[in-house]
Amino acid sequence: MKKLAFLLLILIVGACKDDNSGVGPNRADGFVGVYYTNPVKDNRSSFYVWVVTRKANNRLGIGYYIEDTYKFGNQGTLSKKKEVYFLENVEITADSAFSINESVPVSGSQVRLSGQGRLLKGGDGAARIDVSLEYVGADNKTARTPDQVSFQKVSNVIDEDPKLNDFSYDGTYQTELSEGAKTAFHNWSVSARNNTSFEIDYKIRDKYNQGTIGELINNYILNDAKKVGNRSLAIDMNIQEEASRDKIKIKAVGNKLLRSVGDAPRIAVVVQITNETQGITRMEYLELKKQN
Image 1: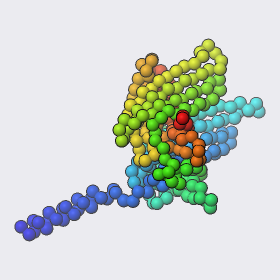
Image 2: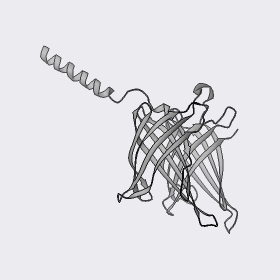
Image 3: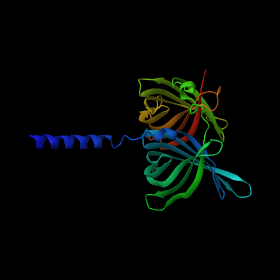
Image 4: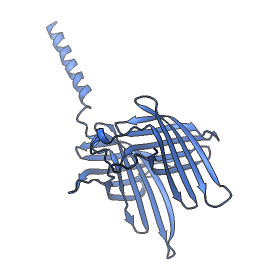
C-alpha cells in the first residue's frame, strides 16, 4: 500500500507540472499596440501596419496590413496594391524577442511568413519592433521581396496609465477614407453582449465622385466580435449582408488607441471583407474615432 501511495503521489506531482508548463510570466502585454513603417524599394513605396494583440502569455496575434504604391514612368503614374496577413501563432521566445513561422491564406493560396523580431526602446523611451521577414508561396517561390524593417509604435497614452486613460468599447465610431473617385465612410456601433464578446453594427457607405453610381451602402451585423486581452478585439465571422443577402466573410483585429490626452478614443483595426457571392475582397487599415 505504501508503494502504491508513493506511485500515485509521483503521478499527481507530474500532472501538476504538466498543467503548469504553459503558464509562465505574461510577456505578451508588453508587445500589444499599433506599429507602422514606410519602407521604400526601387519604384515601390509602402505603408505597413501591425496591430499586435495578446493571444496567450507567450503568444501574439498580428493583423498585418500592407499598402504598396508603385510609380511608373516619367509621368509618375501610380498604382496601388493591398495585402493583409492575419498571424495567429507568433511565439515569444524571450522577454523582448519573438519568432514568426506561419502559413496564412492569401487570394485562394497560402503564403508562409517566417522571421525573427525584437521589441526595443530608444533613448526617448519610444518603442519599436525590428524584424526580418520572408514571404514564401505555396510553390516555394518568393511571394514578396524579403523585408528587414523597423516598425515604430504609435503613441498610446493608455500605456502610461491604463486605469486613468482606458475607455469602454461601447459607442459609435466613424472614419472616412478617400481613394481615387471614391470616399468610403465606415461606421461602427459597438455594444457589449457579455464580458467576452460584442455586437457591432458595421455600415460602409461608398460615395462616388463620378460615374452613374452615386453611392453604395453595405451593412454587416457582427454579433460575436471577441474581446482579446484587456484592449483588443477580434472578428472572424461568416454572415450575410443585410440588404443583398450576399455571403460575406469578415476577419479583423483591433486595438484601443488614444493618441493623446483629450484626443478622441479610437479603435485601430486591420479588416478584410470578402464578398464570396461576388468574388470581391476589401482590405483596410482603419482608425475609427469614437463620437460624443
